[in-house]
Image (tube, rainbow, N blue to C red; front, top):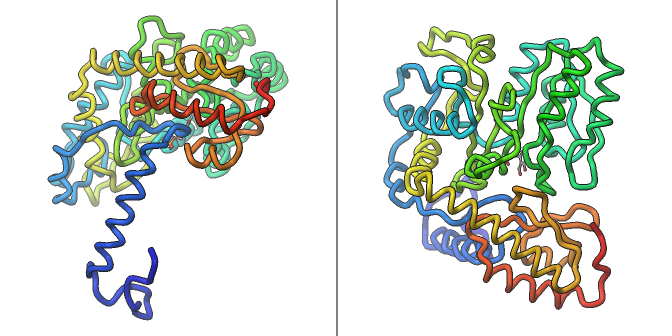
Length: 393
Ligand SMILES: Cc1ncc(COP(=O)(O)O)c(C=O)c1O
């Protein structure tokens, strides 16, 4: 914005709203956002969606307060859409009918917080184990909930170091473990091996345990593959978090928290004043995001979503080949749309919105990332890396 839009009142609110200069500010922002979409490769957000059919619902102050599976005293709700979304994700995540429960969250972080909250209520004396490649928000959640925890080493591909897990569990055998499993790490898209983790728990006879799966991005993709690695309720997890705005895509951040029903029963409280069952973390909850997720699932359908996931993985493979063909050490973990490669100079990193980690960066091949866009990026990358070392992994 070139100039202050209005003289401000002492409280800091403009005297008059939406004059010509305000419209200009909105227009400028629109143009900037539109342009930013053309070079967006480094963050796990699908920009290819069309929810314009839902625009008219902005007219309403929708609020999905309370448990989506209970009657709400607030008639301005979209709970029937939320229930359908949850049932869909329960099915995708291998939850047995009537044995899992869930709700639409504000994003993956809230779903992880929910899983850890349930874990702490069930195992108040528990210890949380998580790997160093875990999303940064998790240490904050652990601090917030005062949960004792141990950060474990990761392997070079981003997967949990199982020997470190076993050694740490062995030392703390008297403490029930809460294992925070990555079903796709943020940076490298590595999937922790649930079979191996459960074998370690069995071997140490640690029968009182809780497993939460952070499937923020990859959970959605794995649900549409023919032969995925174990990742969901069928593999013995207790709760799961998936982001809605990542692979499926949503203009408003959102997510899905799922958990075994018997665990949720332990934390549910009745709130007489609003006549509802309090099972969610937030009070007032977004009523538009369940409609967005519902619309996204319905518009594509099961086979459309399978194609979407397969296309993203093919684009990721194309990116690996293109970068390797130019001598750069690009690679990806199996089942992941994330491609890791040496970090370019800052101007290119910033132009393509790439997230760095040390000497590495990555690109995330979601539906708006086409092979043609990858080709354009690779041309610019090769030019910018002229003579730079290429063997960093
Ligand atoms: C593995 C993982 N967990 C959690 C999160 C946080 O999810 P959200 O941004 O939806 O809160 C992310 C975000 O990128 C992630 O990659």
